[in-house]
Length: 273
Image (cartoon, rainbow, N blue to C red; front, side, top):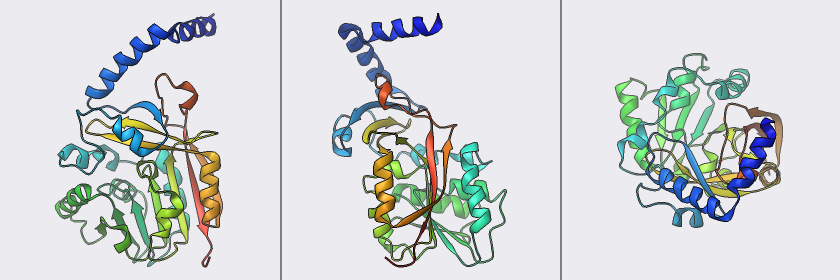
C-alpha cells in the first residue's frame, strides 16, 4: 500500500504544471537557505552550473565570508563514520619521514580529528592544499592552536613539495580538473592516492550545484567508468574500495541522478610511468 501511494505521488509530481510549480518553489528555497546542504539541477560542466547559480551567494570556498573558512569545525572533535577507512589505511601504511598532501583539506579538519586517535610516525608531515581564503584562515587557526609546527599549507599546487600520499577527503568533486590531471601537476608521483567521500554514479557523469550554506559550488559526480579510466591513466592499482553509507546526494526532481552513498578507494601508484 505504501509503495503504491508513493508511486502515485511521484506520478502526480511529474505532471507538467505540478512539476514546474514544485521546481520554482524549491529554487527559491535553494537560493536562500543557510546552514544547508542542498543540491539542485543536472549540468554538463562547471561553467553551465556556475552560470545557473543564484546571485544571492558567492561561488566556491574562495571568498571573504568568514563562515566559508570556518565550516566543518565540529568534525575536528571526533572522526565520523565515513573517516574510518582513511584512519585504517593511514594507521596501517604510513611510515616515518613521509609527507601527505591533503588536497582541499580546509583548515586541517581531518588532521585535527585523526590526531586524537592516531600516533603519526616520527617525521611524518601533513600539508594542506586549499584555496587562498581557506589557507589564510588555516594558518591563523594553526597558530592559535599551537599546531603551526606540525602542519604546513599551500594554495598553489605546483609549489607543493614532493609527497608520498595524496588525500582527497570529500574534495575531488569540487574541482574541474580530473584526478589524473591533478596528480600530473605534482612535483613527484606519490606512492598512494587515498580518495574518500566521492560521489560516484554507476552510469552517469555530470555536474550538479550545491548550496553549502555560505556559497554555491559546482559539484562533480563521477561515473564509475570515468573514475576507472582516471585510475587507468595513472596506472594505479586499487588496493581497497568502500562505500560511505552515511553520505548521500539527493537532487530533487532528478531521482535517477541521486546517490544513496558515496565511495572511497586506496590506490597504489607504480614508481615510474
